[in-house]
Amino acid sequence: TTLAAAGAQAAKLLGSNGGSFQFGRFSCSGNQAFFASTLCIAFVNLRPIVPGHVLVIPKRPVARMHELSDDELSDLWKSTRIVQAAIEKYVQADGFNIAVQDGAAAGQSVPHVHVHVLPRKGGDFERNDDVYDHMETFDARPRSKLQVPLDADRRDRTEEDMAAEAATIRAILDGM
Image 1 (cartoon, one colour):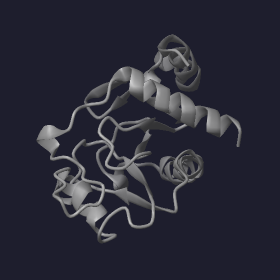
Image 2 (tube, rainbow, N blue to C red):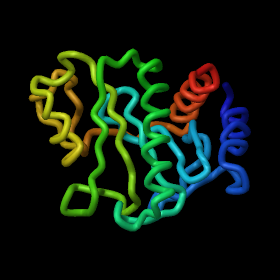
Image 3 (cartoon, rainbow, N blue to C red):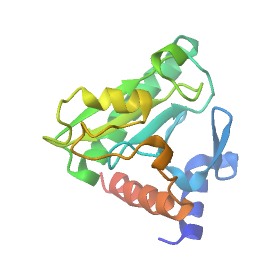
Image 4 (cartoon, rainbow, N blue to C red):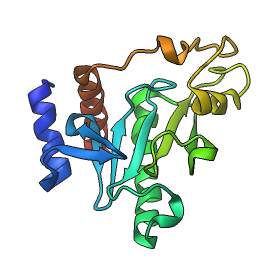
């Protein structure tokens, strides 16, 4: 899928938003999105911890879970369940960590509620809970079998890479 085609697909998903969406203070290209419900959007991660690490957010930017309406909260978790099923097929995951860092003290880096969907494979981390250290710091030390580089050494993915991944996941969702 070309970047233009991916943009057209994302624009259809996002409707009147013109193919873009807000994640906290960041304006994100619709090419990164692969799922949208009435109240939520799912998109590929700029700096994934593991292959297939994606985010699900409410369309309305609020910092904390308690600020979500009941409808937004329900849709967030329903959307997360749909996204998880697609990511399981995408990366042949053996399991998942589904996580929310609610507030800066909990490690939330962008003050917009977001659910991390982290696909897991048996033995991908030396200790299963090491994944939480990676979420907290994005400074993975050699404890991980994945050898995730230090945050300072990690590079943002290109728009083209993220659009291609989002298009692949969209195709999986279309086939479900």
